[in-house]
Each structure stands twice: as C-alpha cells, then as structure tokens.
Image (cartoon, one colour):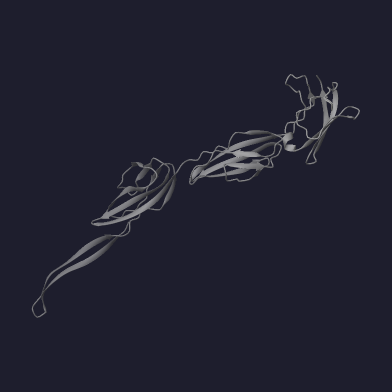
Length: 287
C-alpha cells in the first residue's frame, strides 16, 4: 500500500479598497497524505482449508472481511493483519476484501483464493475375464475441479476415453493388464490407484464325466462367447464324426448325433470359430 504526500500553503492577504495588497496575514505549510489503490495480494490456490493472506500495508491501518464464497470463515488470526491466516469451512473459491484506511481516506481491494481438497483415487476392483478382451473401467467419479486420467502400466489395452472415470477398454492381452487411475486437484498432490485385469486363455477340458452329478458333465468351453458362432466336431479313434454342432452352446455331454451315450473312451475334437480360428485336441469321456 502506498500513499501520496502533498505539501500545500495557506496564505491570507488583506486587500484595500483600491485593489492593492496591503499586507500578508499568515503563511503555513501543511502535509496531506492520500492513499493510493489498496493491494490485497495476488489471487491464489491452496490445498486445504487454511491460507495466509498477503496484502500490503504502508502506513495507516486495514482490515479483512469475507466478500463471497461457498462457505463461512471459521477463523481469522487477526483481521487487521495484512498477512492474516484465514480458515474456511468448505472447499471452493472465496473472495476476501482488504480495506485500508489512512485518516479520512479509504481504499478497497479484493483477492480470490481457491481452496482445494486432497483428491482420493479409486480405480475399482481387480477383474478376471475368461477369454474376453474388452470390458469397462469403473473408477470412482471425480469431484468438481478434479481431473482424472487412465494410463496403461503393463500388458495391453486401448482406452476409449482416458479422461473419464467410466470408459470402455478393448484389445486386452492374455494374462495381467495393469492400469493406473490418477486424480489431481489444482495444487494438491495427485492420488493414484491401480487395477489389474487378468484375461484367462480359452479353457478347454480334457476330461468330462457325464454322470449328472453337476461336475464336469458337459464339454464346457470357458470364453466361447468371445469366438462368435462356433462349430464343434467330435471324432472317434477311427476318424469318424460322432457329434457335430454348427453353433455350439456348451451342451455336449458325451452323446452321439442321435443322443445316444458314447462309450467311455478318448475322442478328438475340432473347434472352428466364425473368424476362422481353429483349435484341435482330445477329450476323455468317463462316466
């Protein structure tokens, strides 16, 4: 805060009837101080609910007061201190007014202070996918003024909207795929959390026991839904087709094409998906 120093003189002259100065009565010198514009300091951003205000004061006196904001002031260390500490009760942007007084002169300035909350990141629960290479990321929603970003740490994956808490992800790879969710809020330290998405390979059983005990009763292909329309062919040891399904639905339980039970033995299969992928192997039927 600056003031302007003005010197001025007071002279009283006595003029006679002819218009001539007869004599000087008094002469004095006075000093007048006038305030220049108040300075409440630069706008600021702080992590937390406490801030040290930074007004300037050169002569005279001044005081702080809350001009606007989403909450209330809980504490002022000293409203007459240019560098007073203020504590508010709610995060958000506040405006504080600094009024400086010198004699009968008064000047006002305002400063905007943004109080930011410490962010907390939560990327969601880890996932296990059965031969599925796409899913949805579901982090906790970010709050006002916060910024979130998804990043690939290891494995593979194409994130559709990296700056959104809820977003699709494609092109995952087999095994573990690790992603980081980072949340920042202005000057506050950022927060990070990680999610592991494990993609299991297509699981093809080598043994089925169709005795209707609820365990291994059918030739269950875990992850078959990712293959699209899938054809299953089952062969005996002679190479003869004993079962065929052009749109397999995980229901084969060791029967032939007419529904008759096949003898306990080793059989060979060929799986062909709509995208042209072919998988061959063997399966034992044992009741």
